[in-house]
Amino acid sequence: MRILTRPDFDGVVCAVLLRDALDAEAPVVWTQPNDIQQGMMSVRSDDILANLPFDERCGLWFDHHFSNQIDQPFEGAFAIAPSAAGVIFDYYQGRFTRDFDELVTATDKIDSADLNLAEIESPEDHPHILLSMTLAGRTTEDLIYADRLVDLLQKNPLEAVLADREVAQRCQEVVSQNRVYKGYLQEYTRMEAEVSITDFRGIDNPPDGNRFLVYALFPDAVVNVKLYHYYGKLVVKVGHSILKDGCRVNVGKLLADFYGGGHRGAGACRFPIEQADDLLPQIMAALLANEPN
Picture 1 (cartoon, rainbow, N blue to C red):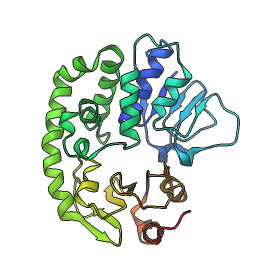
Picture 2: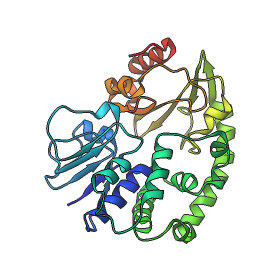
Picture 3: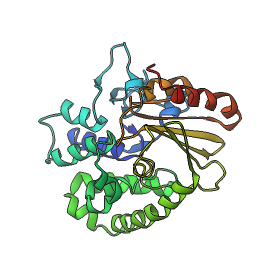
Picture 4: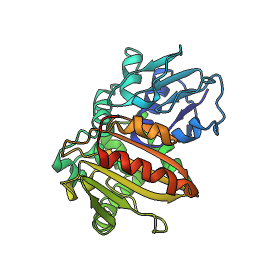
């Protein structure tokens, strides 16, 4: 048995809950939705998929993304919910060996971007939010760290997790990176109507940082589009502003037509760079028109 999930905070907590509820030290395979959608990932009959699109080869499936709804029978649980971890938490109630209520509540808040201005501008004052930002999922070292975080969160209270040497170091790095990232956002983000566009395509090793900060820096935008190149593909991340209402586009539904998906308010897709001139204008046209889809 393996747990297949994505290397973000929701994915990490999904793995924590599944391993605890099933009393199994199942290995975690970190992957992306696009790999599942395109059949690039080998899926076994005893695998558990969490926070990913459905694959009929799996044994159990848990998810919460609008764009991943299916109309066929399956084992597991699906709900339009703040986090996939919350779906798993409800499904296995009564089987956990520890109290994960606080962790799941924080995951719901983070994955649904239910944050206020203070939490956005000063994540270092909010431990769960800061911890979530230590997960990058880009390099082999990042994935090894995600494995470590699963082990730590499964067995320890938050205070002990934050006291771990590697976690503490990554938290310090996040605080520093966020300061630098703010400058990059200000330099590489432009406005078109009520859409802020953060375009990192011309940057080698594009910076990463607080994904919510752009909403505070560009308060007139109702939606943000972030662009960067990654291993021959264009990554497009789209998110409704969490500080200003007004985007009527269902992001998950929109991006499902472009090798991606997500929630109503946030999602991502990736496709070969050579397709960008054709596909990106279609995405932008839908966001600029701002009509319900």
